[in-house]
Image (cartoon, rainbow, N blue to C red; front, side, top):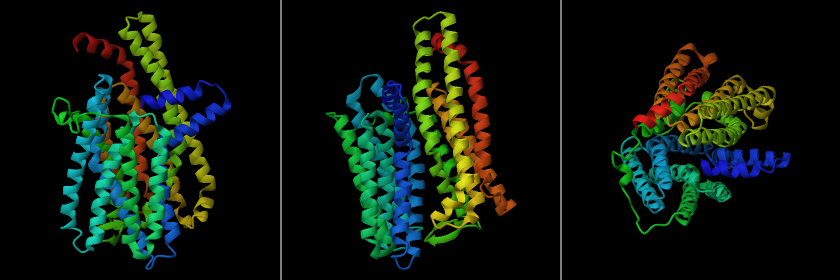
Length: 458
């Protein structure tokens, strides 16, 4: 993310209201652009085709199929994402750029093989009751999305952010046009448009990567060597992605869920509010990126430069205090902007639901989910700071605890009844925010001691 912070600092350096607005807008696009495009793309397909596709249940089958593709591909590729990002960062830091592309190709091959084998097994087991065309489209979508997540997380090292957003806009534009053009073929036609659009998106993303990193070698398996593999980061990716989706899966396969197509289920009660709530994180994500990747990063670099450069104790203490202050201010700014968003949703939420043609009975759950989404942004902010401090051990147990609490609290709310739905995810996020901030405070208190000990004893 250092390249993004560099671009944002250049914009803010102009020190004007226009540059500040532009920086926030830019941060919002970078942090949430692909995510928002994906949600809006699928919603737009639903709005454009619901009245045209017969039976209308085909649109629901398409949307549920896509939701499962995204969830499962994120979880399966989660074990590679953070570990590979750290490995690539090490290569770039050591100026071994010639091995970046071969390593990326090797990881994509591994993701393709893993998702491909898993997808084929599912094709001939739990999906046997569906048509061959549907099963092949689900397999292709599963493999393509797994590779897209790897490309997206890798693209953080490239500074062509406008090109990245254009690739996503093009991919989802083709997805919408393709799906609407093939709507007369029902769910399979809609899914075909989705697969075609995402295949083009992946080709565009890979084109950016191949253009920026060239090498005489095609594959490098060094990432998979045990001494190079960041096992803790692999588990963080798995735990965190499972934690994000755990409550959704529990509701889907509980008494609140309904069968949609084959083994895939959905929860009419739970799904709509939670996905709408995720749209509310855009301001918080923009603030997160702007404050953490500029103010905190500057103070972080100043502290470690003072330590490594043999600065005086007074200077090191001052830099340490500045880093702690910037972290607290960054998290506080995220909290303030998300509180404002929560208040706006609570005031205008019913108007939003009416505009979308959704029953206002969803309003209580939407309010809970908006609060939960706001807490999730705060949790992400603390995890990012821990990554900068290289405290992978803390991030690992926090991610594991998040997964456990989301499962336990969500199951508990199912027993308590409909009035408590959504409180499981919100409660888990609240506990995690409190625990992570407490852990961060303790980490900062011991940072100077730990830094000197690591230098003294390696």
